Amino acid sequence: MLETIRRRFRALQPRADFCSLRYVEEDKEGLSVRQGRQQPLVRRHDRGAMITVLDGGGYGYAATADLSEAGLRAAFERARDWARATAGRGVFDYRRIQLPSPQGCYRGPGVAEDQAWPRAAMLDLLLSESAAAKGDDARVVDWSAGLVRQDIRQLYLTSGGGEAEQQLRALTPSLVVTAFADGRVQTRSLGGQYGGLGRQGGMELIAEAGLRGAGRRVADQALQLLYAPNCPSGAMDLLLMPEQMMLQIHESIGHPLELDRILGDERNYAGTSFVTPDMFGSYRYGSELLNVTFDPLQRNELASYGWDDDGKPAAKAWLIRDGVLERPLGGDISTARARLDGFALDGVANSRACNWNRPAIDRMANLNVEPGDKTFEQLVAGIERGVLMQTNVSWSIDDSRNKFQFGCEWGQLVEDGELKGVVRNPNYRGVSASFWRSLKAVGDASTFAVMGTPYCGKGEPNQVVRVGHASPACVFGGVDVFGGAA
Image (cartoon, rainbow, N blue to C red; front, side):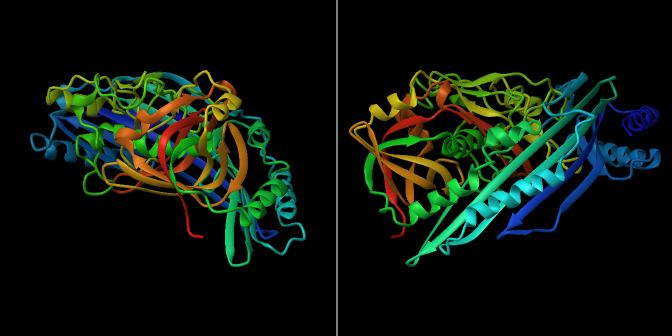
């Protein structure tokens, strides 16, 4: 199919300042078991192409599932007509930018032509772990396990001779257990309830995720939470494990740094940002211990790739270094717009679309906190009074991605440098603009974990993309911690 797409695009001989075709083919399969019963198999195969045209200073695009030469030509003509109609009427003159024409091939981990998908073995594993989670305990009232596989192939072609092919495989395992007793309900999960263990790779990810043997362990933790005391309230130290750091990074660093949001594009839907263009290069986002990178070349993370969807080569970039804000999450088009306003900002390769029928916009990809120098034992030893929190269960954040309140599945008291008992319903709140400045200790590589989510939403019409977040455990000082409903 790829060779056919190449031939048909070249046959178009598109007459425009710039034209690109982005072909996406995705094969997705979901296995799930709930309360010991296999759920219907979910299978989805989807393919199509997006044509983008820059002409006379205007920008237009059109998507089509008709991949015949006539279908592609009709899409090109619609995109060209839109580009010409918007010329001189948009917020940006697209003659000011030259989009790249990439060359090459990127294959992510786990991509192999002869790699069979062991569906029967995976279903047996899910049934086994589901049964172990339930056991014979009547207090376990809901239990489920699942595995989603995605195989993605992309081809990006440009009128300037660009040709880049990418192949990716992602696996997302899950296991969730809910327990009930004495009027209380507690839920515990493996890696979170929102696909937190998603990564790119092959069957080795099953072992890395710890799915085998997780059923009984996760159920035992849910039962333990039923009888744990409520989380205490007050200002204290907060030790966040990677499963919760993922959400903290996502909401209070990732979204605020998206440049199109900073420029106002998302204002009527997903909100704005407390970050302004003049902050880059000088604003103290966090303590000097905070170092944040954008790294789509971290191959095992969920959002790894060789080029973004506007053809920009992927590269690791520092967004925050020693606590100081350096660059935004902005692709070539957004950074060119910012320059018109007098802000010479370096961007990253983050123009991304969720599929062939959506245009590329500024998105997170792999957004990571770099490791520090403290072991887990040293992190705990440095806390006089605090709470360890792990695995997000609820979140709320304002339209400017500033004031937030997050809740976790699991909490443990830390007193006089030692881990103590489990607490339930742990929550904390803060303000992004000051929260990261309270960072007082960063874990080393031994505390580091790769997490991800397939559910990052943004854009009109909505786009849900895969995002990776890797982080060590981190300690924050003087955080407003509180318990949930008794």
